[in-house]
Image (cartoon, rainbow, N blue to C red):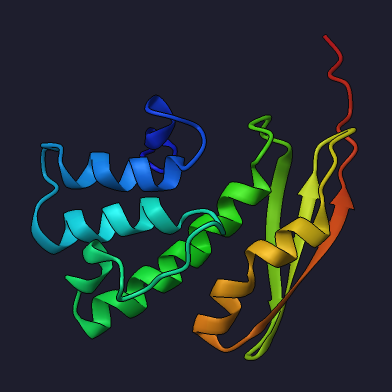
Length: 148
């Protein structure tokens, strides 16, 4: 819910603006390391900024929290790319394979498009952190018209 909050300030650099907003806002139930992790996730949700100890908010996290942040940021990047058009085009995801090669089948609703190359680029952080290879396969689901 917060990943694009920086767009309130400016679309360009919204990941950095969002981090600032989270760090400097009072959000009920969000304090301490959880607030810093959330701010870092907002910063790293797109590929414009990679997790780095040079970033103040990321540097406040301990080693385990940094690893968790990198994994969650990778998942958030992937989820955002899968739903980038905000049209709820994905009917279902199914996963098979493992432990190092994982295939994700993306079932799309009628006439929906999916840029698999873009998804694979967004998946790189998650692949690196989990030491696995993700491949994506598009499946078009034809929904039947309902009869009244």
